[in-house]
Length: 244
Ligand code: CA
Image (cartoon, rainbow, N blue to C red):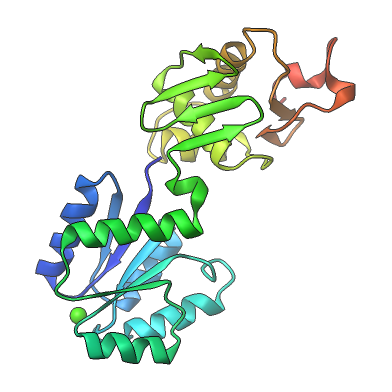
């Protein structure tokens, strides 16, 4: 559930330096050595942010960035462009490639990590934020703590990841296989009903103080984090049931 950064850079030493420092800063890093490989990875493992070298063999960074901006799925993907010299950087700005920020080589790893965080804060506040909130629910990512109002809630690591995913995407309905992929991981050997069981435990923990249920069951479709509808509060409602 970490923030995934795709690094596109043909120079192995620079790519390794970037990957090493981003991983040390807590990011998940995937690497591509040219534009073609980047396009493939963008499909297979959609990143939260792209670090793109301007000078690449074949498809240039500028052209790749332009293509991404034309595609619906990547039109708003945060992109930081790497350039070799200040003059190039100035030229890039003039070219209006659609990049969100530019970093000039040689760069300090600390500066680059700071720029990544700044761009994420600006463009993906839910991803970069240390604090996720919904209604009276509060998740402190740095401290790994969850509160409902003033009550602290103890969650297992899986329940925590599940709640985090829902908090990052409020009101969106996810079916069980989507939750399996995103919370347990694609490779996890887990059955779909494990999702229901985890949702059940999460609900119990969240509502232990008798609060309204924020986890909505959408019959036949999945689960979402939502404010309870007035009609659904009290009594036996479908909110308490699982996806059939
Ligand atoms: Ca290069």
